[in-house]
Picture 1 (cartoon, rainbow, N blue to C red):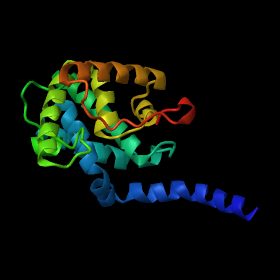
Picture 2 (picture 1 turned 90 degrees about the horizontal axis):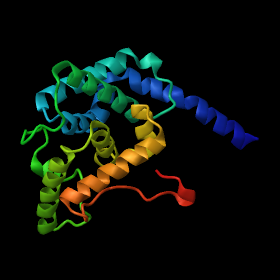
Picture 3 (picture 1 turned 90 degrees about the vertical axis):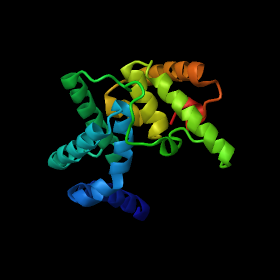
Length: 207
């Protein structure tokens, strides 16, 4: 009985903790800005626009924090807001995903962390950088949905459920887009392109 009461209290306290986090804009920016900036930068390939979108994302999130229901993580919620802002900007200015040979806010060395190798030798790091550039080129040929899902899964290490929640898409459709994206990327960048994909959970459930 005591354990059940404690569990109920913990569950009830969770929304309060999240509300406190959303009320503290400085902590919110400090915690989530790096990941959001990386995601938006890889999505549109324009560092100045990425900075502007991320800033707008935090303003929109802070002003709309009362609408956060708590049925997903703060990171998933923020990523969904950022994705909608990216799409709005693309419709407004007819941006193309991944402009050819366009510099981003992330240099090649930092971008190597996008699909990291488990090796740490200098040779492995050079290979990782080369593979990252190959992946960047391959992503230009993906559909917008495939590219977004690929980046969320391997760039941001989001679960399939989190991706489905962020982009309002059935999880089986997310899996289909991810499978096709992986097939296309590996066909161009090489079959041994490293990823951070998590293995399916026991019983067939995927993370």
